[in-house]
Image 1 (cartoon, rainbow, N blue to C red):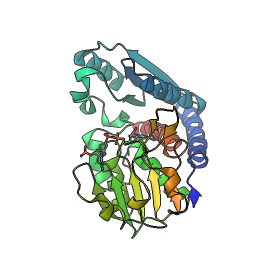
Image 2 (tube, rainbow, N blue to C red; image 1 turned 90 degrees about the horizontal axis):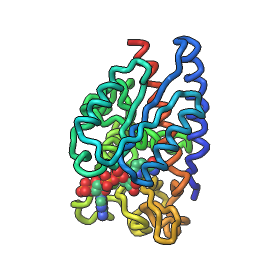
Image 3 (spheres, rainbow, N blue to C red; image 1 turned 135 degrees about the horizontal axis):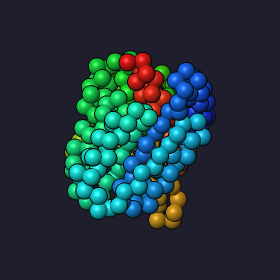
Image 4 (cartoon, rainbow, N blue to C red; image 1 turned 45 degrees about the vertical axis):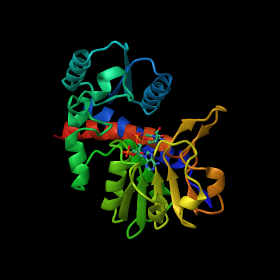
Length: 284
Ligand SMILES: NC(=O)c1ccc[n+]([C@@H]2O[C@H](COP(=O)([O-])OP(=O)(O)OC[C@H]3O[C@@H](n4cnc5c(N)ncnc54)[C@H](OP(=O)(O)O)[C@@H]3O)[C@@H](O)[C@H]2O)c1
């Protein structure tokens, strides 16, 4: 079995991004800028938002982390996003999830202009993905999974691919990308019956259910490839995925580790998406 380590492909993407950032600066006499909005006090969000801001700086972008209090209202958040939409110095922006209280229920995906929507929640961006538009801006984690498969020369066309999970940020765009890459796709979720009958026919399984160390050997066909998107801190403080990795070694042919599997790819693609947004905006 090979470990599908995300660090080498993520570094490759970040090196390419750095070159594009420099080229953009030379041609347009300004920096590319990413804005990350963090509402509330979730410790996990603090770690993720800081990491995004740090990597953006590392590749030569300007990055701004806007931290808003837990009491922020929908109107206040919307006003900020509209201001950022209209700010010509901002190329990409995102609101870190989860959001506190009822903010999660607000249509934030409509408040960020599709041109700067690096997380790709806007219906326009979801639509271009569905249309298999080569210019589509695609959600970071699923796009990162495709880049991970490509880096390790795991072909997708003609394969049976199963995605566990149907969230808008991972599961749904993941299935669409696999379909766009000519896989035969199956999508399962919490209401699916006899899941292992479906996962067992898959050559590639992407697991994004958000259940710590839940899926063991019996779920997967011998020599299949398993991409574990899940990320959790166990009671003992260890970072684990959705899969029971120890059971899968010597059963599957490839497995992405947690951590250092999909995680680094997600951040690298976020930077790639930000550059893409900047380049498209000057072109149009
Ligand atoms: N590494 C990274 O960069 C990265 C990025 C994003 C997310 N993640 C991690 O990936 C995991 C999934 O994230 P998410 O945002 O997609 O989570 P989510 O919004 O909670 O969605 C989980 C999905 O899994 C389905 N599900 C739950 N239990 C299931 C079961 N027993 N069998 C089959 N499907 C089941 C749910 O079905 P229903 O729709 O029926 O509820 C739902 O569609 C989380 O651990 C998250 O932390 C990692």
